[in-house]
Image (cartoon, rainbow, N blue to C red):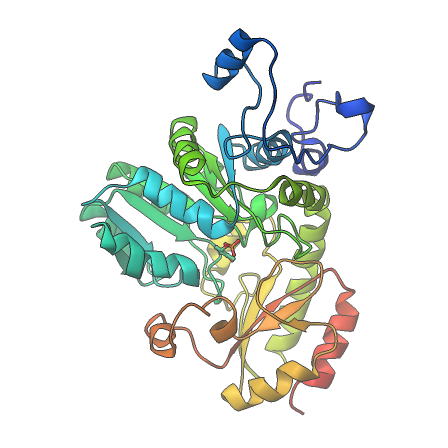
Length: 394
Ligand SMILES: *Cc1c(COP(=O)(O)O)cnc(C)c1O
């Protein structure tokens, strides 16, 4: 089966990667193929598959049918030429760097990157002579100036973690391409429902599939989508170094992706309501949400995003002590790391986005200790607001 022209994101969420209905025994659902290897009676065919001259699978570290369907769904949702998957988001991000960069290359990025990515910049990439300039996150002029000083790869997240700053991907991609640099965007927070970075000029999009893509907090995974020549190099690095996505996880991610458009639409709507509620609450000092006109990235977000996303962060007037009393009083929120699930998840950066960093490192990155990150689930927003009302200081 081939898709009709121009299917929408909703249709691709359901059917992407699963148009071929010749599943085993005419099953309506894609099987979880746990087999590590695939057999051939015809040795010539076996050789042709091994050489990539014919479609087929050889060994699970390279390819697998269930994993392939996940890659194909993501490729279609991101509007990319190619996609390759990983055991986690950090595997996708680190394999992208290690496959594409060499000693002497220079990355330009920003201070507010995901904690694990910030560790790659600070600790592991310098060990092999790859250095990163970290710019002030919201200062587009500063980022452009840094790119113009020489840059192999521009790396941004939009919106950022945990303060939801928004990058003008089109503008920064143009500056990077003018300097001959590659553009990589971590699209974990926006998802392809709210932003499609490739349409804005990104060469590659990376994701932690563990978050919104899977959406149920029960599977880890990552994916890199984009230009075919780049994805082929990243795939080759991954097939040798081995951070392959497991078939069971691929199945859970595919199952989660079928409702991505519904979940994200609901989370966009609820998060905007909750952000407005919190902004008007006397115990709240500040709310960070791209959908609020007071937010620094609001104008860019209006242009670039279909919805403003399901994440927000806020600080309490009572500081860290108030946070410690507030969090355990919430009923409809797990106090836990991670984000993007069907259940509301809440926590301070010290135990969530920036658990990898020391207090000094968080301070240097401009992340206040009294901040609360709130990942809105798909519960009724009236119930979430009632819960926040009873838990916030009177
Ligand atoms: C969680 C996350 C990652 C890392 O993904 P894992 O699946 O935990 O390895 C990378 N980037 C962002 C923005 C994230 O939220």
